[in-house]
Image (tube, rainbow, N blue to C red; front, side, top):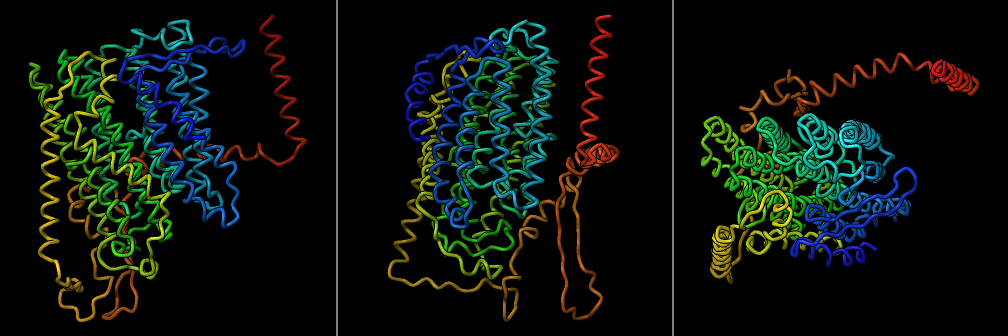
Length: 618
């Protein structure tokens, strides 16, 4: 069914993105909703392309990923049904033009993803993460409801088209928080690193690669209706983007769980996307349209690129998990030999997500950097100062991303197996799981090599915000550079193969500092690899240490554990939860378990309601 849906959407989406057509229809939905408008413009079409593309690959991937659960006797009927509901709800979100139907679709998206996420609900951690996610999503929708109510009171219409030119700073801020919770902005991100590690891999890929982008879609849609943003709002968006990028990748560096590391990396990339959006907003606010063009081009292209390489990385993580049955990097190591294909694909994804040439991540981040530089044509020294600081932060984020994924690849695939579990791994990954990864790797490379060909995918939605001429010449120069880099790399690999032809390459143990009998424990751990770098960033995180004090000269056994704690979780979310639990605990007596008492509650409520009704008439 997903194949048919993707095929049916291909032609109209291409028509909208390349020919600037618009599809619109109205469906009568009863007395409450009446005529509900569905509209697919360039902005909607862009997100539909991502939803359908990643959804199709996720369907293929899940076929073999879920097989072990079938063998264990787990029923998959409801999971597969909810998978399609999840995809359909995201499509409805980006097409709906009616406030009420949009909120219904938004809630359907949240609830279906919650049920998909708790697939392994037998585990306590899964249930806790699921409840945390569901509560957070409902907090987010409360802000959206308030924002939409304010817009209805102002316009008297449930239709989005009535919003044009009438969204105030206050309404935009409220909607930004509501959509930002779904997107995973810092400090509204606490649900994200809990949800992704416990969800099945294909669901994690969809949630990270697609679903969190619906939050970005909502902000872009409100921005489109808002028109020219104010300088204050633009700087606030930039601050949120930079904070999300910085703290997201900082906590990604410190993780041992590779799926949790990818979750924090998603926060970082959402921050980069938002930074590009903020650059464009500042360009609009200061009437610097070149800055606006590069900001939006970088923003939209990074939305597309992140959906490609992040989905690819989650699929790679799923391939590792199916063979090792652990998400802890410290229990792996040496997988490059038994899982050579997965290692190569993981490495390619790591290069793309680290924004290194010749892959697609480099192109979108490069455009955002150009947006920073074009700001200097604006005669405003305060803007110069902010842009220089933002440039430095994003550059530093790029360095941290490289450390995070160098760490992940090295600890998982290089060295020697750290546990017995990692010693008996085989590359028994189905073609149905490898094919989507290969397709995504190909897309990542092709966009990086020929950006001037694929930039047209984002031109139409950007031109809804500002008319401009596409900088094909600049992209062609980047294309030539990336192609040349690939040729040089291939020549070096070819020369190496030629020089080693007919010769035996011996693999020896890594030098172990003079140890006569080296063991796997002598290797670098993930913590020891990242500790020197994290040492000078201690104000931005909290470290928890658990170790056994050594009191003997030759101790038989000792232990040391180090854990990085999210300061937003520790100082903001945790105290709120504690206070909330304390207040709720005072009302436990209400839920007594006695049916008679529940009936009394109903009668009392009914009497109070009648009294209020009579009192109102009097």
